[in-house]
Image (cartoon, rainbow, N blue to C red):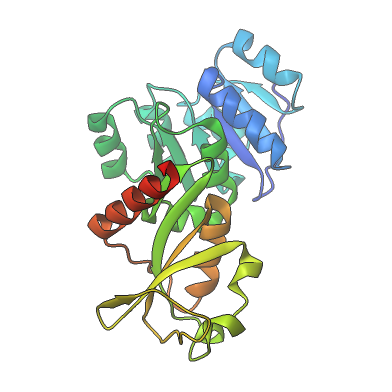
Length: 250
């Protein structure tokens, strides 16, 4: 344990290997990602060492220790411990590009936002699989707040369309089904309509999609490649979510 290595930008470091951190590591492995696990407690690292080669016994808040193990070369670091403000501060000082941190309360979440954490997860609401998805899919980091999950890994979300490839053509010609998503509605000039195969998508139209979370976020990235700002009317999406649930119950 503790061998120094230089991180590949696509590799992910996980600090803290309690129940939550371990779940994240296991899911990242399923995604085929290289993972380095860090914990001050050797006993917690022992089970992880059976899954991955790179485990480090270190204090996640020790700036010099993190530098010594090249954590500054990682694009993404997941902080899975509850007492994490000092760890986050150290990562920010190192210039880590994406920091995903665990919050234990709404107050804790607000503090993490204020100091500059990219994505905050609440373990009671965010499973290890979802956190791994956030870490491995750049579009999820951009658009995760614009999704409402409706169960079994499916979600509904809306985004404005700006990519020229998808503009001024009938919906049937866009082959969006290849992205494994379904179009629920299209809003044009403030008016929402149910789409048909002949519906034309215009620049700035807001399109609402249903599908697996990963497929929706990938679709958002493609539809917004000329403009990365996704738009979402939360009240409207809540109504749609409830409507879908009502349909499922019938």
